[in-house]
Length: 438
Figure 1 (cartoon, rainbow, N blue to C red):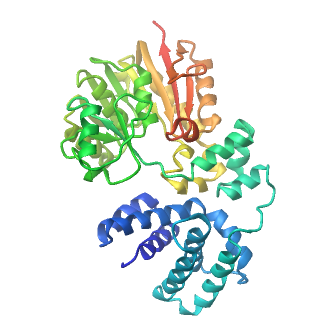
Figure 2: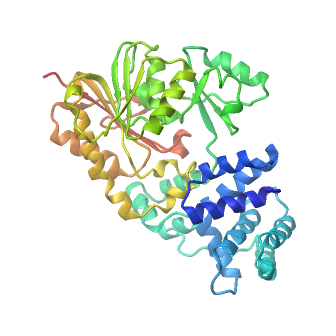
Figure 3: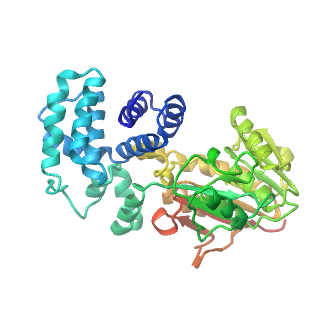
């Protein structure tokens, strides 16, 4: 595979055809191709950008294309060209058109070169005077402009308001970068920041949590200190959840839905590797990832175990100082990293609160008197977040919410939602609850 555009088109086809996650496809593709770092970065930008903006791109493709039906592979190609023309500033328009026509031949569709050329040239001609998207000021406008589903736009506008929803959707179109959580068992943020500087890596220190470093991108395995376990990768909001929980040395902790292990690692480091963490997942393969990560970080207090978070374990009753319930969710908070999530249907999301409530109820039995129950999701929908917590508190009078602060912002009834356009993090929900004495 010789060019970034070919690589990006291959990613789009595999994601569409196989229903694969773009991140996984990109990782495999970049490992198997000989693209240099510049072309690899462009391939990532193009493929993710098209997925993030597919509805918006289709609106203008369909406006300028006279063909009543496009083959899926041809639509992928037109989306790729349209993305470069409409949403990228650094690629010359003529290059986007010419490269798309050339790529059309490369993929074995020479008869379509005339159509590709005509559609993209017309789009280029009217680039600064495109037809307006209809319905400005409505949820349907936001859905089309930011390539979201209509139902999600309507839901969030109802819950949060139009301007807030637009700011969130706009943030979901931006690159997320990577947050490195520094392993203070081995180093500190200042020392590691110096190592990054010496390696020519520009880094930022975000306002939370402590000992976090942010990079705009790159492969974590290529960074200094990776093999030595000086850091692990975890979004700042998820890492902040462990800080909110008030983890300290010597605790007995249950991380009930632990894979890929970030919260277990965060807890182990804050516990100074003293105490015990039981990290659970249904799948042995994911448990091996946790074991491998713990070994790299030099953490020995984590014990992995295959277990179903919704299945009762009598031996665990009243046994843990902290139970972390990071439950399965719709994932709408991580659309910057997993743009395919925006296609998730309303019916799929609607079934989740019942599952989440069942898991939360089950895990509550494992919290010792005076212990903490931490409920979290990587979604932003109230029905999976505040509604689940409020229903739980109503039926479990032995638990009470505990308020906390994130920077200068105060939680509400022990609940806080992180937002990319406000907190610079993933969309992420945290609720902290304390169990009273028996």
